[in-house]
Amino acid sequence: MNPTALLRTAHPTSLIGAPTDIGAGARGASMGPEALRVAGLQAALESHGLQVFDRGNLSGPPNPWQPPVDGYRHLADVVDWNQRVFDAVYAELQLGHLPILLGGDHCLGLGSISAVARHCAEAGKKLRVLWLDAHTDFNTSDLTPSGNVHGMPVACLCGFGPTELTHLANMPGGGPALQTNQIRQIGIRSVDAGEKRFVHEQGLEVFDMRYIDEVGMRQTMQQALEGVDTNTHLHVSFDVDFLDPAIAPGVGTTVPGGPTYREAQLCMEMIADSGRLASLDIMELNPALDVRNSTAVLAVDLVESLFGKSTLMRIRPA
Image 1: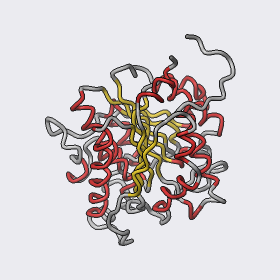
Image 2: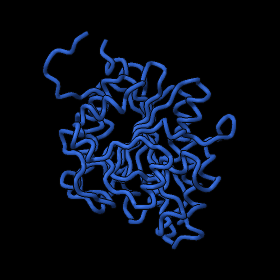
Image 3: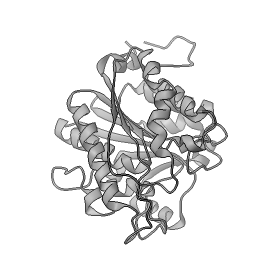
């Protein structure tokens, strides 16, 4: 049995909507979960043999659209939403399901990945996070003037930020959800100067677009997946702005020069080939900025590739 078939048969899949743009700098990502449903996400997954449970949408505080306070916008509301996401994702993992979080802005990756980290610690599994994004999201309140928490989730997951977010996972031993050597960032091409220095200081492994241009997506993904084995829980956090805006306009923070359709497909297919995908975020889709829901349709197409759709015509070696 090839690894992708093993993945399909092993994990019932649960869709969890988180309709909020509480951590973003533009309104509209709160409509992302429904746009993905309209684009046929559940039917697409079921066509690949998956058993899919749609858990509906979480509820939480509305976006007050206020300026930052002490360097953070809407901190209490961001904490509230992420706690709800944590609880929902953790519950699905406890059932043995593969949770797919439908965002919503990328600050919600805090709740999702914190739940995965807690689950892995309890199950004795290694964790690898692939962060597919135009941005490193490694800002702190001291580094960013906007205070938008969707630019901070990776820093918070690694222990840099307010305690309410850095210790959401309540990890054994009291540490942060992630160590920097557990995450690989792919597609990066927009990083603030202070954030870039901080990324270098902390030693994050970043495969930026220049690197992908130089060595290709195949070698990039081989390196990003190196060391992933049968005891590894692989989490993919897919920010739709990872993609080039020429093919994915429906995001709030477009950055030219992202992966093409074929590069993105290869990225997803190689993740699927690993057979280790165990949880997923689909983040920052903004239907208010989209064209006839085309970005949602593309996102569903790429997610299908994570679960078995392949352009491969030649026979795979056994």
